[in-house]
Amino acid sequence: MRLREIASLARGVRDRLGEAFIVLARPEHPYLLEPPDLLIGGEGLLTAVFLPNSRESRSPQLLRRRLVAARLALPEHARCVLLATGEFIGRVQSGAEDARRFLSERDFEILLSIDDHRGLAELAASNDIRMSRSRELARQRKLNAERSARALFMSEVAERFDSLAADGPSEVAQSTSLVEEIESVLSRIAARDTSGGWAAQETGVFRRSRLLHPFRRGGQTLMSVRTDERSRGLFLAVQTILGNQYTLDMGVPYSQSSALPVVFPDRKQRAGLDQETLMRAASLAGLIIGPAGAPQQVEKFIALEEAARERPLRRADLADWLRRH
Image 1 (cartoon, helix red, strand yellow):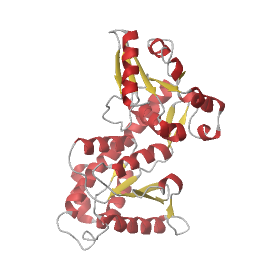
Image 2 (tube, one colour):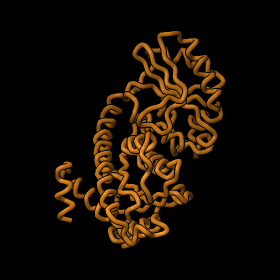
Image 3 (tube, helix red, strand yellow):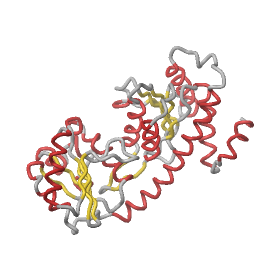
Image 4 (spheres, one colour):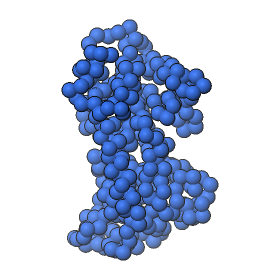
C-alpha cells in the first residue's frame, strides 16, 4: 500500500473516531527507522498498525524486524495490528513455512483483513483489547534499555577514536578501499578468537549485500559496512541486527546474545539529523557504531568494548585507558 493510500486510510479512521483520537500515517519516531504504517492514539489507548509492503509480503522476516523495533520503542500498552490481505493472514495463521519461522498470529493483538479496514476504527477505540504479556514486555524493554544505553555510550566513545584517527592520515587510512582494510582486520580477529581458528562469516541475507560484511567472533557479531550519501549500509546493519539477534514470543522480543554487536563504517557520516537518527536506532537494537574509516583503531576499540563489559567505563576513564593501551 503506497503512502497516498495509507494517508487515505488514516483520514477514514480519523473521521470514524472523531476528535478524541489522533491518527498518524507513517509517523516519525526518534528510534524507529521503519515505523508502523499507522499510529492511533486517544483515551489512554495506543494502536500501531502494520500493513505488509510487497517486500514484507514476500519475506515475512522483514515485517518481523519492524515489529520487534516497535515493541521495543513504543509503550508496552501499545496494541499491534496486522492489517493485511487474507492470503497473508492465512499464511501466518496456518503456520506456512515461510511465515512460521518469523511470525505468529500471537505476535499481534489484532489480525484484520485489508478488505475489512472499516473495522479498524472500532477496534482501535476498544478498551477490551490489550497486550496480554505487558509485564513480560516491560521487563524485556527494561533489559533492552540497559543494552541500548551501553551501545549508545560506546558509540559516543567511538567518536573519540575517530578524532584520534584524524590526527594524521596513516598509511592504512590512505588505502583506496578502507572497507577492505577493515574487513581484513575483522577477519583476522574472528579467526584468532573463534573456536577452530577460522573466521565464521555469515551466509544468506548477510552476504547478498555488498554494503555489509559480518563476521562472528565467539558470540559477538562484528561488521564492516560501506557508507554512502543515503546511509544505506548503516541502515542495513541496524535492520540486520533486529532481524537476526531478536526473537518474538507472543509479541515479546528477546535478545539472543549478551555481547553487543559492533559495526565499523568505512567513513564518517556527515553530521545531521540522519546521523542522529541512525545512532538512536542502532542503540535500540543494541548495536554499537564503532570508529569510522579507521582500520588501525578497530582492534583497540574491540578490546575497550570487551573491558567495558567487566567494569562500567566512565568518560573520565577513557583518556587513562587510551594512554595505557
